[in-house]
Image 1 (spheres, one colour):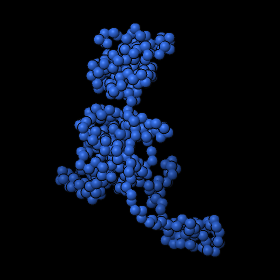
Image 2 (image 1 turned 180 degrees about the vertical axis):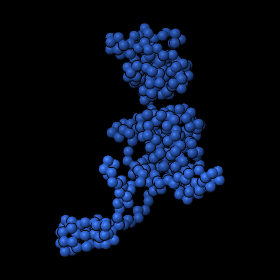
Image 3 (image 1 turned 90 degrees about the vertical axis):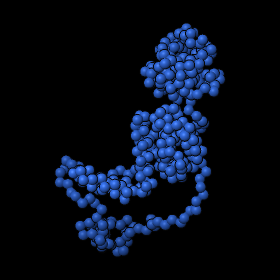
Image 4 (image 1 turned 180 degrees about the horizontal axis):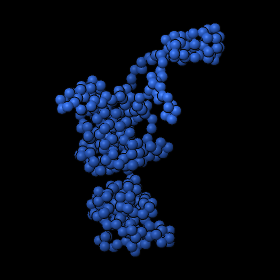
Length: 350
């Protein structure tokens, strides 16, 4: 993902472009005596001179030595280490990225704490400190949720853009971070539900929804737009088939359950079965239906604990699927011996 301008505004502000000035890259340094279009210019750091390698004419003096100040004499240590500092973070562009660490070993006098506090105040402004704190919270919450670093980076980009544009002024920091993580999960095609994000961040569903709607309208967000740029018709919302992989993994189901369950959900959507139900409810009911169909029985209580919906909701979707079981189950599954309609429990349809 490009860091130049992540998450552009849906209606960008018209800014007056200021004239920019830069060095003329067409200017070339050549020796006035040799007039060679491809000069052999040598930098002699020992004397601080810039010398033409062909005729020996000194073209400049007091050249700054940009090499490292130390030398290494051991051949097994590799090349001479260069003074490059730590890796730069594109998310912290324009900010000081070098930290000053002060030891707390002061014999209990409290001087180290005062020095640490003074260093933190002088090194960064309040806005930069708040941004760094938000980045730390995003990283911690993503680690608790076992989310990859790519999602953490997307959430940080989105938070930085919303902070620059002042889109969620007055909203709690936890709610803004929760909305950024929720959107980042959808952008990376690993969606999480509102309930899961709320349980992780302890943010109310109402406040999280307000922050999400504000960011969605400001940046004209489409789920999967950044991760799937070649898709012509990106989905407008998270589908139940997107949740199957995670739910099946938590339930320790065989690998063949997830594709069959996905086909059943897609076929049910085409027939208009269980329309209007939430994706979480459909995913839970479809897994319950598929497990009994394939003989991999899982109780509604186990699926309810993983999906976060009640057992009654799961069995309600199951009843809708059971009524159209002949249309949902492919004949090839029955011929191959994978599925049997008589395995579906009748008592659950009462």
